[in-house]
Length: 192
Image (tube, rainbow, N blue to C red; front, side):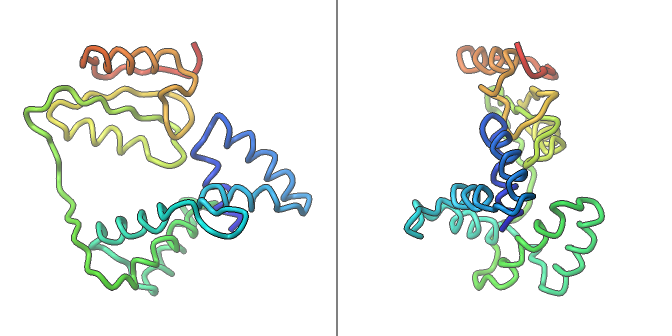
């Protein structure tokens, strides 16, 4: 659960990261209360043990239905070993987080395909170079496959970019919302 306490905090640079620093510092001193609270917040668990909603169950269902490449338990053991080499802190966790799909009774319905969205107006794709949750390479690939996709890049940290401290990102996105226009290939940094 400690890993989940870390993972949940990585989504929110502004509040989650400072809280994570405190929670990890406390955990190294033997106090895991902060990490446990972070897990509860991330999973929507209330103080009385109930859950606010079923969003974690829903995302599990969506992911399992999308994944035709469900790994068996034996394959997951091998994936965990391999992923740990490339991602020592989270590789095993990520491999094992998919094992529920191995036992999902409903067959996968998702089929990977390229979506180009021909005839649509400009689609702005915003990617962050050091996103702890969504690889920047995915943003590049999405913008390229969309027939009218343009890529706006934050050369910085965080899971999202808009309203996260980059005046450049905010200006480009605001302009896009107001006009529907965006230039491809703009690179912004954190700060004003």
